[in-house]
Amino acid sequence: MIFDMKSKSAGFALGLVLLLWSPSGARAETLADTLKSAYINSGLIDQNRALLRSADENVAQAVASLRPIIDWTADVTRDFSRVRTAGRSRSSGTTTGNLGITGSLLLYDFGLSEFLIEAAKETVLATRQTLISVEQFVLLTAVRAYMNVIRNQEFVALRKNNLRLLDEELRAAQDRFEVGEVTRTDVAQAEAAVALAQSGLASAQGDLTRAIEEFREAVGRDPGALRTPGDLAGLSGDVEAAKAVAVRRHPDILTAQHNVAAAELNILAANAVMRPSLNLIGRVGTNDELSGSDYSRSGRVGIELRGPIYQGGRLTSAKRQAMAQRDSQLAQLHLVGLQIKQDVGDSYANLRAARASSVASREAVRAATVAFEGVREEAQLGARTTLDVLDAEQELLDAQANLISANADVVIAAYSVLSAMGELTVKDLNLGVQTYDPTAYYDLVRTAPVAGSAQGQKLDRVLRAIGKN
Image 1: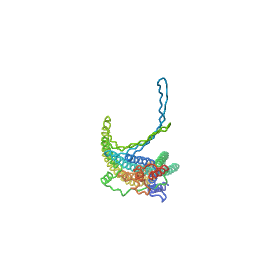
Image 2: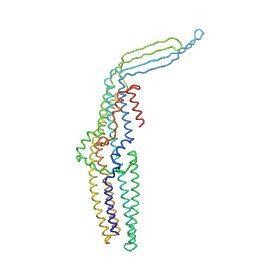
Image 3: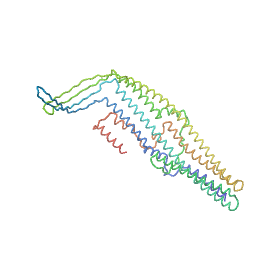
Image 4: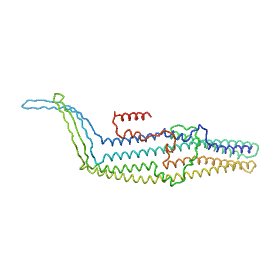
């Protein structure tokens, strides 16, 4: 009877490992499916798209400063008086209405407006890269959530199988106790092992529930039947080459570069503010006496040159502030470069360690399976105790659990390498999902269209479509 149980448990243990790490059926959800859903459903990506559209509007507002500025004014005024002369009082009053239109057009400002426009454009480019960085974060979070669900599902399956085997061990120990082959101690040891297995199963089920909740938050829906992905074999082992790629294209370093460029332009703008500006100004208006028939019409046009003389040191302070911000952005660029190189190195180190752990864990499962079979065989011959069998089975369980974790860690580490290199995007992964075009909204607003124009109406339709999503 012991031999039959041993063969069944060992065969089931080996079969379980193969089942857990073999691809599922054709209908199983793949990691690519999950990443698509995470990209489409991410509120964090939507938030940063809105921030990008806000940055686009800064360009439109800077461009608008080069356009004519036209305002209207209107007022109604009541003038009244009471005069007493030679003992006699006389009252009078008039009501007048004024309507006027004023306009101004910037002719020249020593490049101030152009500097501000270019700085706004650099900020837009930096914000686009921030959006890509957020996309990478969302996808990597989805990878972790996907693998943690698989990891904990397999832990639950492993714990259930372990509990079934221990229940068989307990029944066998009770049967052998009835015929006097073992002592009450052996039965108690088997009972304790079953109780611990029940506790381990409950803990694994709780971990699985938490992993599903994390998946739901990261992906925007419940997980389906997940297919276990393999390692990314195409990753090069050349860490220095990977660092060079990351320094060139990682969104964080591109963001820092654009921020430096914007800071440099802000210094030029701070210099230009100190210089005069030349404006074309004009006004037309009408003044009507509402209580009579008198009226007047007037207008004026001219060129105005104005510039600062003294503003209490505010302008020079603004220039020093712009220079300090430029220095800060330069330092940030340096720090980001160092961090990216470190992240690439750390990611590759984690990947190597995870792969090595996977190989070692597979060997540990093989060895633990052989040891378990041997102990069970020796127990049948009376050379081993029930406790020896239980210990060997626990070692096999631990080895199988380590293999599950190691394989999950390999996948997470591989995608972490892509993220560290700046290549964990929907486009780089070729997921086949429609991606967000960051230039579409910018192209609509960069010329600062006014309401009612053809461009403005097109923009209104786009905004309504965004609001419905």
